[in-house]
Image (cartoon, rainbow, N blue to C red; front, side, top):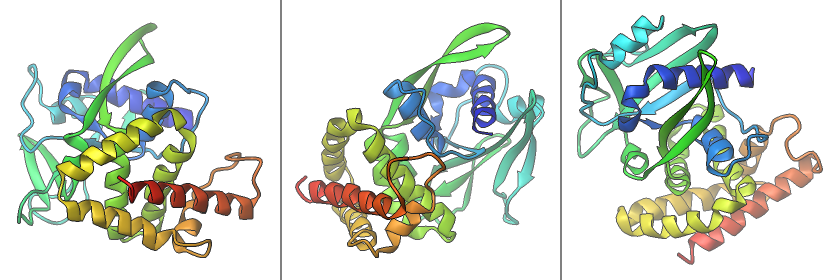
Length: 277
């Protein structure tokens, strides 16, 4: 259940609270933080999953007297090998106070390196992926103000990618996905932010203009081309991919055909504005 997932997410943040200044929350949890804590709409229920992507630097300092893997193991999570390489891709899975969680650590793959996994801290492996630096270099701080532990309300400051960098990253990577469901989720996250977070629009376009100048121009060209290729008309496969992720109750005033037309309008408007940046 979504609320159970959110509570498991909070428990994970609490366990890692001393490390939060060094971590960036990515994946499907970033949109939830945008909705609930950046624009303050806690009635919104963006799509999310049980797994938690945590972005880390290539060298994560030890904070306090415990390493990250020690904190997770003491909390009852178990490392699960996800690859046969050396070192292997590892996720941490299990039950935290009655809430199921699955955590994976990711770091940036730089230069010509073909390393799949990087040892970022003694005992902690992170999967190395292209474009992660877009997210970590453009992280913002957001306050989570409704987490209760021990019958006390705690304030947690978490770092997430800026909405613009999140959209930029998703627009770059979705074509690399091997699984259609992951590609569909990437595109739905972009759609959700554009359609449901109007308060962020001006800032998103301003930051995208900065990102265009900060990173390789060909990255921005690839980003724009990827979207144009998947949202040229109502029959484009991007429309169906986004529609496949529509949750029950989302956009209740639209039937399936109207929803697809709305998706097309959102992306066509976005692409048009990108070309003017």
